[in-house]
Length: 122
Image (cartoon, rainbow, N blue to C red; front, side):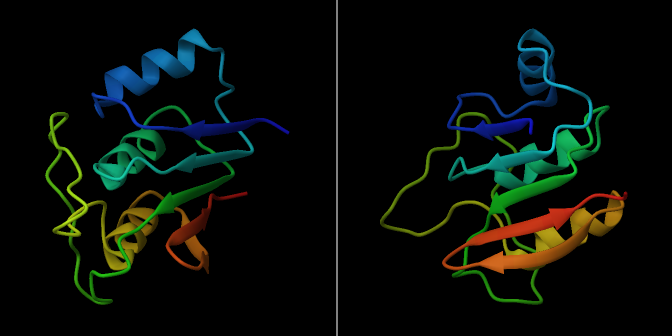
């Protein structure tokens, strides 16, 4: 099984991740990718599944304080820093679901407290 866990980085751009994926010889269809960076999670998720990389399963931490039915996320700014006092980080589950559908993925599970799992086309 090929697993990739993304941790905090100072740049969430596709170029940064694609370069790292290429550098570490990540296969184009890894079995599982986990995104948990407490900031621009949605933008990294979107960049990965919109690129040549197509994980079979991908999990993304979401902000469970953002209401269902509302697409919310932080701006795609590599300088964004999470502030534990204001609870503004990541994206709403609705926003992650919308991006999943846009790229042919299906939201299939939510693990408490705040991880959403999407399955790619098989």
